[in-house]
Amino acid sequence: MNQRAHLPIYTKTYDFIKLVYQITRQFKREYKYSLGVELEQIAWQMLDEIIKTNYLSDYLKKDGIKTISALFDRFKIRFRFAFEIDLISDKKFAIVQKNIEEIGKMIGGWLDWAIKQNRIHLKRSGGNLTSAESLQKFVYDN
Image (cartoon, rainbow, N blue to C red; front, top):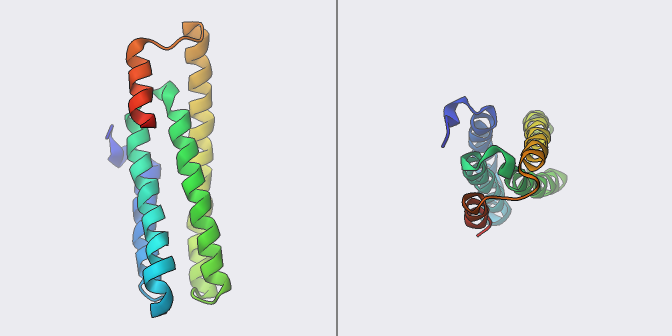
């Protein structure tokens, strides 16, 4: 990954995964291996998409960031559900919510930046992708 240690969203998401594991290991057994595992998997998918998206050219990152955002929304819905069925204490929920807000802002800022990069590239190239760019987009999409 291009300087992943310097990518704040990577570091924040990695730390967030550790927090998710601390919380899900305390779930009741009936939820630990279903909802708990699903929360963990979605968090890992987010990190995987962050890594994958970071490899793309700047103006191709928009779609990857949208995928990250969709995964993040899936996580938030399931996490809220876990809270509502009393699997998570108010204190832990507040801690995770703070992290969710910070990561959400990072995703939103990254998406805004990627949209700008996309517009700049399209303006410069007349709206056409080169064959190498098309291949890179195809590889990402598949």
